[in-house]
Image (tube, rainbow, N blue to C red):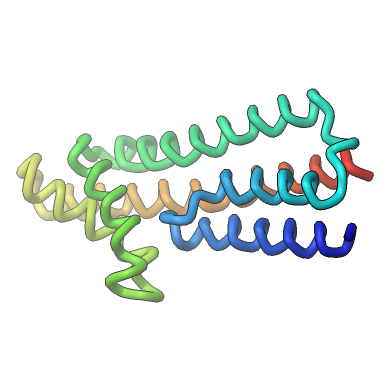
Length: 160
């Protein structure tokens, strides 16, 4: 049964990492789901209260990193709230409209279009905001990937 628990947990973790590329996938929930499924199949013995406190703090960090990276990226490059919302919408829609390149083009185009439409920024400023949203997104992907890797490492440490 332990083998089955590991297989299911690993599949859940892989899906969580796919959420870095397809943000519609709730990565944090798949990571936690992997922990829970492992526990239900094998045992929760190693998953102490401290384990869950640490993991909840990491989940909060994941959500914060995602939001903060986008906000800082757009704001640092002179964008408005419209640019931030456009970037977020583009991030969610982009991968489905343009399957491979959409993950990068979506946030960029979303921010540019929103800046042009709502805040009436010039083309140059709108493109600058688009670049900021792309930088924010890439920063978020790296940060979330590292945090998720640490979450899994903590899981392995506690159950062994």
